[in-house]
Length: 330
Image 1 (cartoon, rainbow, N blue to C red):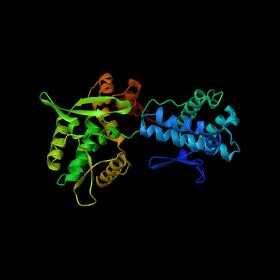
Image 2 (image 1 turned 180 degrees about the vertical axis):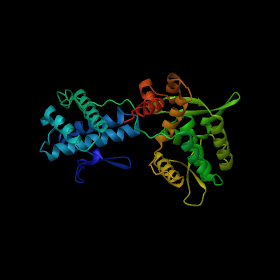
Image 3 (image 1 turned 90 degrees about the vertical axis):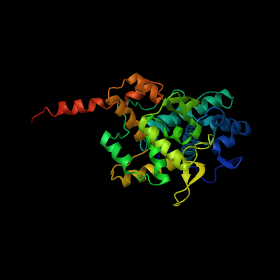
């Protein structure tokens, strides 16, 4: 992992915020209380998404640890050459998107320090990251038979099985990100006219609503009825299991819980490839496009900002390409 490229020393300065200890890079701590506060404010005030905040924090700590290892211990001594050398070092062990994310984190952090008058200039401003152009997504996509085989393999005679089928169904039929799925409350599955709808709270605070596919409606109805949570609107929709008892707790699932469940269900269904949560979002979008759905509607249904993002899931040209390749009769 890129954030483990240069580990942060356990002796690094720490500051307590509530119940958490935050590691401060020595260069930041040595620059004084104003610099320390500005460093903490960058992550607390400018980044609302928790996952992005943690990724940027790890990137910043990795950068400062690399600097310390190379003898740069003062903020004012950091130059563009150091940032460029760090980017080069990262490329030996990390993928291009990770390198670009680290550079973005460092650049934004130094912008914040410049605005706070901690530094006169941003040493990362002129540094360019590696070029990375993606025209086809790398996320594995299940075909119709594979997706049906996995869903049908789930033992729905148990409450946990009903929960897992419904959760996978939301990702597949509603093109939902796992973070939005595990954040759902019971009231986020609601009737609107003659149909049921889902309310998803997506990245950036966006509220996204989708009509429910008839198969997904059956999956959720069976789960909610069996769990007896239909009247508990403010409670989590997808809940953790209590050990191996088969009973559910009142606590919401974490995306890591969902990931482990997916890995277990895929193995039980006989899949050799390692599947993650995003596979089902990609599978749903791809199935929709292959069935003649439009890119514009897929973009709206997936709550993508750009159609280019949605296009990454379009695998409809794959079959055409394969047919053309097979024309070579050597």
